[in-house]
Image (cartoon, rainbow, N blue to C red; front, side):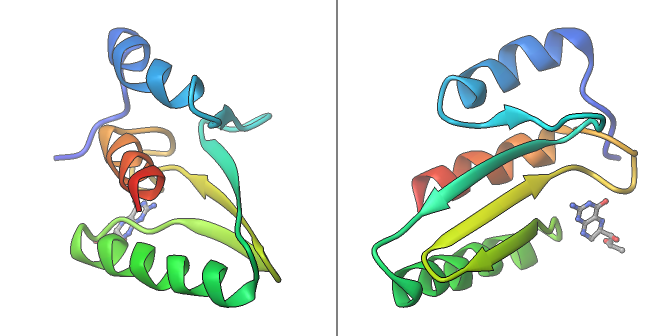
Length: 96
Ligand SMILES: C[C@H](O)[C@H](O)[C@H]1CNC2=NC(N)=NC(=O)C2=N1
């Protein structure tokens, strides 16, 4: 069962992500990051790989793409805020 991240969970799990370009979203319990690529093909290829992981883990990003830029927001809709699944997906997105 997915749960909202606790205060200690936030410190341990979110800190490395916040040090790696992720930011807290204003007015909402979510994290966001803008990924930049060489061109649209690179951006969309990354999105395709990211989508496969999202589907595999049944945890999906909110994202917006224009040309070589992908703005990603992660939050767990089922719990109305951040859970460990968001951190897991964020780490995967950074690694892809
Ligand atoms: C029914 C299905 O498992 C749920 O709706 C999943 C799908 N993907 C999801 N993605 C995200 N980001 N949050 C969720 O709560 C969520 N729930």
